[in-house]
Length: 435
Ligand code: SAH
Ligand code: SF4
Ligand code: F3S
Image (cartoon, rainbow, N blue to C red; front, side, top):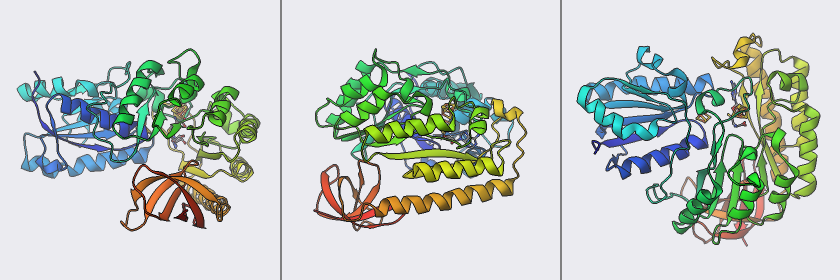
């Protein structure tokens, strides 16, 4: 039996990390551990970290630095750095100025209870960054009760794409899929616990291999689960979006008309250096296919500006792609070198100031497009799944099938699906009244 402890978790990074933290929480509670909302009153502080950009790592390092104060008051404290940054840095974290006791990669977090028992015996630092092989197990009974009617579920982990800028394949290991039968069982249990909307997670869900028909078959099976109202998924790699997937989104009533499929750049030479496996034209063909078969579909993208060798003309092509596609939303980032990736061998030659200008130029243009698209909703009625009162506790908030946030006046509860007449719009959300 391992030693039980009071633990506190803080999560950085993407939705998969958020879900991993929930799973870890359930796993530790299953071992008799007790969750605390206060790091000052905890035996173990876990930071589940992200390594995707330098900024993400700086955030973690400065957070660990600030934990010094707590350790001074509680010398028995165990600080665990878990997740992607732990995997990328390994034992180098013990040499850094930050006080860390354990370094556990995404595949090793599950062994925390045993490591903690060992740590209590000898107080030796622990590092486990063995290659992640399995998917972090999920015991739906032990998951924290969903705070909302929606939740995430990892259906596959790892990535085999090796985009030249990206650390994810280096920290999350090779692609592996959860069997479809297990996913069906898990979603069934989540729905019994009140979940009405599920977002299926994978670095590249289109290469899901957990059933013979792949991702489209999985979507069709999930679509038949009673009482589940909405299905979303992320992320789709543009090179792998198939007509079968597009048809699944188009025909399955619960699968929402929203596809996040990151272009990263609008310039073919840059896409080639990024090792993305498609050209600008290929991408636009996929957009045409999607728009043709899924009326009213919302599209969003990630974009990187300032990739090595990106000229003004390359950047202009990215902007022209954004104008041509008219994405509902774009998440844009300045390129930063990740050690160990193949792009780290290219010269990071776009000056910082130019990257910043390109980023803010892109964001301004996209805000204008998002506002136009949102204004087109005024006067129409949208189906909104209610999430609860808005942040100020006044009106209600929810999302449309196209994943747009709606702030509204109405009388209904969390998890209800209602028609809302849209009366106003900003770049980030819609305003409406329950019909
Ligand atoms: N699997 C997903 C998400 C990957 S990480 C996908 O393929 O889309 C999320 C986003 O971070 C990426 O889409 C990319 O836009 C951005 N990103 C990844 N590495 C980066 C780097 N080195 N510099 C800047 N942005 C990066
Ligand atoms: Fe990174 Fe590319 Fe894999 Fe996405 S598809 S996780 S960007 S390597
Ligand atoms: Fe996610 Fe960051 Fe890891 S984006 S997969 S937590 S490197």
